[in-house]
Length: 310
Image 1 (cartoon, helix red, strand yellow):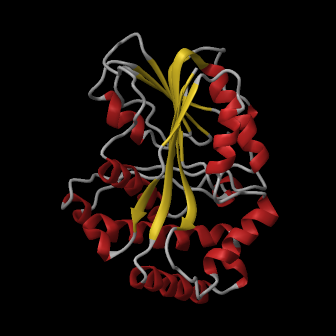
Image 2 (cartoon, rainbow, N blue to C red):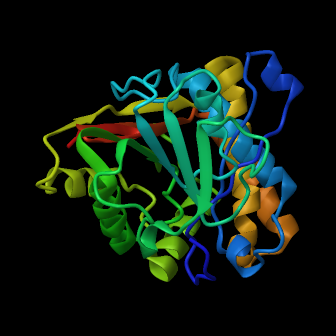
């Protein structure tokens, strides 16, 4: 994915550490979106955003209790795994150190390690929307997540076609995604969430609640045998304990860094950050809950979480 795009397409992932996270046995790993990165590919953008993306990997692992749900034997050295949009490779590195399967990661930017990495890991630069640089039926397990800010609705159709194409018969696809909506009585008094959704929809054709679209694309793909969907919810704020607090911090951190990609939505930086603080407080007071899902088809998985089987 190595071109300069007018759309917000991808996010990045970098390792970091945090004393707060150590308290709950989290390391940290996350990704991010934003054409800011594509307009200035030589710069890695906000360090705080890269740290946030890094946090997210281990936060979600702790919240959900798994790195993946598909029934794949990663201790089999004959198994090949592809992580689409691997960022700095945190998901792969977390698994490869303890398993003997062969792991491949692709991303638009070379944030992944090129020298110091396990012998069963390979990384390369590639663009999912331009077509994956692999032959048909190459992988036993294809994994992707957090493309909600990266793909337009038409891009999702291409993405699903590509990951299905490179997955072997009887292989699995897992898509882990988030619908950016709140499941409780959040009024969004600041209008911040609704304004961001409006800009992304009108300017970039990005749907912040992609799970129905992804599910439809999976269900209408004749190559897939079975699809499993597992909706879930994520508590935001102190009512969710330590992980709830970290999840709300992750949301606030992401909103602030996301603003750079949209030029602060016509506000000054100070005005925008003040609104972020206000909506964060509202989420805390109303006990915010994020909708999550997993989709799985004995050849595909999603957050929404979903697995699918080919």
